[in-house]
Image 1: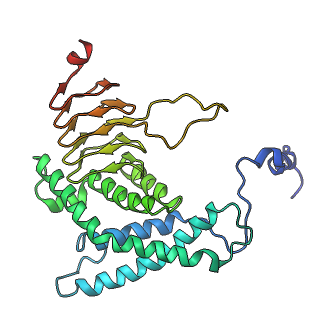
Image 2: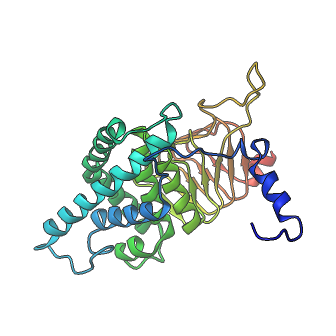
Length: 297
């Protein structure tokens, strides 16, 4: 370094000491690359172009050219996604010292293909979400406006993609995809959450859906809704307990209005309505309407 100015050399020494960086340091290994947020953005745009042709990607796609455009997009998606899955697998494998390409590349390509084969089913599922969002919002002029403009559909699309990768066991990338939607829309859905068909999020800003949440079919939620996990006691060693169901189960045809919090592994019965600004910590029977007045009672 140049001549010390204001103790910079001393600061560098402190920052370079193992006691300072050891909990936040990832040692570089040959041929390893971390998953790239920029590449994942490109992957998500490819997925949108494939799932919603004509709305995203090449706007000139037609019935005559859709096979060509889809083929190109799928091939590009497979190449990019395989690379990102490889990076995620290598990054997560702490026992891998050299991390040679041959060890994990085959698995990453297999996982990428497994995800791509699910895309037709994913499109069918997203079509139900678009339908539900359009039918639930009188302000929507047509389904195209819902697809192109609505943050709820954007967040749900990210979640559907992230959830499939999560189920395939892909590390890091599902959470990165969910956080992309969180940053863009203010809607935070953990990739582990299970969500049925015809799901809609109205407005959505501040909505949080936790990891072990289970949401049925034809469920509608509004902005500021939180499906939150209860705080569990530590295990016998004082460590936080992970991987156990701790978020709500919401059955079919439930509506949850704005700024309501559902806490813990509770069950909201079929057809129930949760009014705004309530805090629910117990099961709700099917068909019930829960308002602040009902909670106070």
